[in-house]
Length: 513
Picture 1 (spheres, rainbow, N blue to C red):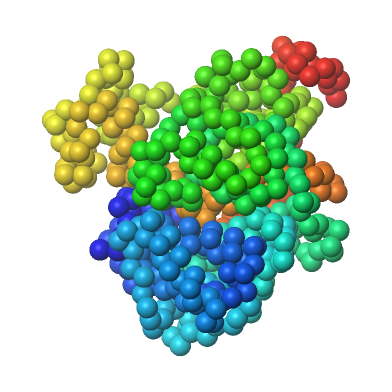
Picture 2 (picture 1 turned 90 degrees about the horizontal axis):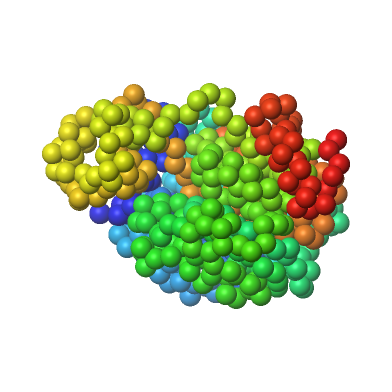
């Protein structure tokens, strides 16, 4: 069987975005859709193109159980085995096919044009030019001669998204592939750029002290991008409390089978070791990081967490600057919070509009259990019994054998492993748990890293709106930068005089416009 051992989480992610999703049909669609990945000598001998190829392998290998790896010239042939090994490390069951017959979709990096024989086949070309991600459905786009990973990585995400939209065209609202794209990760426009609008990276990059909170799927994309910057100097704090779980392989682009149960922080440090960055590990949650930090002045926080409560907690600590990355089932993006309290703060974006359900209510609804019983179990740290598992399996119409391995786990852990882990796909009222696709999370992380690098290099000629949003499940829009006005709600932190005074005391900023 070519399906990965983390396929449950893959099915969960797909179930949120594909209309008429049915797991068996989804599996068969993937097994009958081998994807061809093509590259040539200009790819393996070029830093940017090689980065695009690397990210493309990391994305395709997590979703598609059958791939065709095709060297488009003799000089590239030796690199096929490198890719083969990388794919098997992600999914040991993956089928690497030798023949291109049967492939109807190809993703090509390099300068060589490819023709597929199957009627109706599609060939997509990806590459980059520094900060610009390039995509074409018609012709090779090549890659720049520099070592900028941002356009390169983003191009792989655009390519993987277009492949996905073709494979599942009949199950998406807007599956039309993109036309020619030149997307700048400096200003997020798609117009042609002059050289001064797409500057080369300097020989040495000095990054301001940055605290990265979260080394999940978005954090993986962030680390991947920075790991390509050998010339980067500076201090990067890494805050994360969870180890790598098998289900994480669905969209964590740094991970392979060998990292399961290992430290996310150690994995990040391993990837960054060829840079000149000083990586400081902080195993634990945000609250523990603050408690252990002697200096509560927080110069810049890069936010890659996956829940509202953590984001508001980060804003409540009053960092000087916050760059936030996020993903949803449909779109992804970043938000910039650089002038508290005059501009929209991070809490403005996530301020609850109504009372949120309790943890007990969420778990009870997801598992089909009475809320009072769940509340007691959480309070007592009670473990899940075989009888309770049988009750949950019947309530969720889930095969009992898929849940039995989690007998004896605390209820909270059971919920995290089965619901968040993608074994139980839906709540009792049919709502899906929100899990992005790998190409969505990776792009959000790359954008987050690009934001801090371009900020320190002073490359942006004009201030952008608070948010930038991209929907990879439909054709790329022309206007990606979206204004977000500061809330006038008195509940928000940036409107609270005590928070304003605390911020001023921290950083010596007294003016509130």
